[in-house]
Length: 365
Image (cartoon, rainbow, N blue to C red; front, top):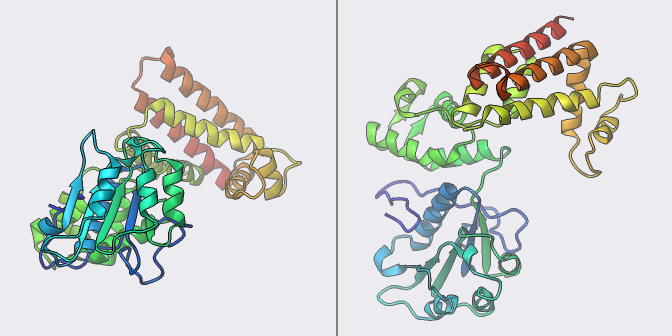
């Protein structure tokens, strides 16, 4: 088991490289690995602990290479850890190997003053030492992040994956696996996981254990091993409702309340915000995307895509049906707050069905 909690698989393809944080000075260039020439220290950041752990595992695997992990890696921890001792370890030559990989976790527990020895170390790192700091334990000191972004020998590795990056991220992980998934199978995995991308490695490990390394898999081979469908972004629900697609909307609703663990009142708030935006741009005086953005309070320089979506929805729905949608939302809120003794998810199912019907009627003109 690697320090990142990811088992090294003998003979397996090289794992995908960790992603350097966008905008970081000294980020690896195109084709250059995260452990490229001149790098001496890495800061692995992210809000998802599982993705951070996976990024750490891949990075350490890359830094260790074909060396003996037990001779190379030193995982320094403990509540009383002093970062000055970490720097001393970095300045210590390796024994029976040509490099040392020193890992320090939960760096967020250290104050701005306590991280100063590490910041100073970046000015004169040891060529045979590779220092890896991992977020967690609190808020990372801003001066530490700044030092890593500005140092020519440091890298910031972002573990979190945004919605726009998800497809590329999944494709990269699948290409690094020993398994060969047909395009339809890869699409099924991505759609099933939704926002729960931290489960991908476990799914791939299960599939490899079942079918063996190098197996070629189609969609029908995956079903029993994907587990519960993952959470999805809220706009998948509102988009389905705007299309009048009741089946998809109900499926997404269940993924939000089950895998996403969202309380019914939280889902209701998502829908209230969506229709609130529609009402705010539901005016003859608002005819352009810029005017809609102004009505929604979107600051200049920010994306006006939400304004365009709200304006399109307002035009398709019409004022009368928008009013009926608000009435349906109000009825659901009263039911969720105790007016009716009804299961919260059932209340939302009825609400979603009513809203989808309004959208379908609007589309038929």
